[in-house]
Amino acid sequence: MSRFQFVADHRDAYGVKRLCEVLGLNRSSYYKWLAGRKARASRQTEDRLLAERIRKVHGESGGTYGSPRVTAELRAKGLRINAKRVARVMRTFSIAGIRLRRRVRTTVPGPAAAQVPDLFQRDFTATEPGRKYMGDITYLPLAGGEFLYLATVLDCFSRKVVGWSIADHMRTGLVADALQMAASTRGSLDGAVFHSDHGAQYGSRAFADLCDQLGVTR
Image 1 (cartoon, rainbow, N blue to C red):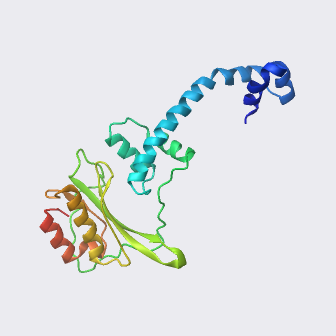
Image 2: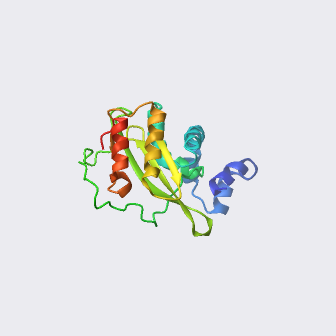
Image 3: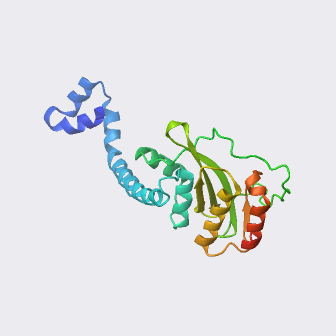
């Protein structure tokens, strides 16, 4: 409890002047705090309501989304929200996404793979869903020093994970399964552009053939 709150709780019994003297407070500072108490209570109520919406989005992601992706999802649902406020509320209410430590090398270039053009040119945004996707591999540390690999496919418009795959290996099947899940989730990926790093999995002939089958431009 703050000293100002203590004064507010006991002012009827002891008086503001006496309490401020005992606690070493400036009375003008106390009255300034008191005037802003209603505004603070209103903000706290708004934060609690926002936290409920954040928890829903966070839960739908399986507890993986951090504040940037939560913000994108809320905006996609029509809520005009500041990313800094989402991050602050998530900290206040102890809502945290999974932070994956990148200690394992997941990008292994394929020396024989044909290079594909960089159609994104560092622009990882989209004006509509279903047009631009990006994929990546990271790892999930387990007890005993073991780990699994996670491949994801994200829609650049909403930052929503539309496809994913988990395995104990980094072979092409890992990323292929994630892309196939994305195709199933969206119904079709025909005409979409997919961006990834230069890992051997994404540069393999098998993955290129899958993209051709799905109508995806790498």
